[in-house]
Image (tube, rainbow, N blue to C red):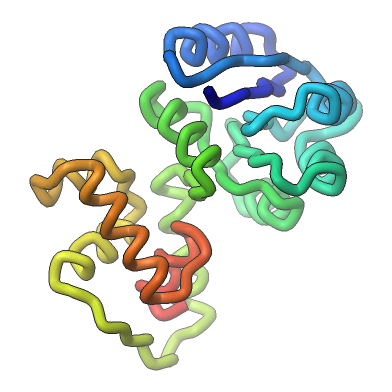
Length: 208
């Protein structure tokens, strides 16, 4: 069971997220907070596996709350869920230690998948956000030689789609293989490329 803490200053958003999570047999909402200060307090007391964190909130914002929660309990996985996908929100959140960054217009299935991926140690990102991260890395390393590794043809197919920001389900559909097979390939790719998470793997694919 994945223990989830919901943090958002809008009651309607929290209610919708709770309904989504409560309908899943492997997710349990252990608490809710409408501001960053309460999020820090609840995270310390409830010890959730994943915190779904809004960024703009009154008082203590989501970035500050993320930093404080992780300073107390580094094992906590914090997935940002926000309306604001610009760099002024993205990079401070990642610097604070957030493991993922999803936008609130994401489909419900992607939100649930994001929580599960975060709990499993992965880094869930909205496709547009991941593409922007990759493009910035490519631009910063323009002219650098592409790294090489002993990859199979299928692993290279999966790697290219990861770099394009596709989810495991989307990759499985595109390549006509099972989601479990996709996960196996990604695990192998991370090992072969020395990538700690999905974002690093995407950056590796683009020479970052």
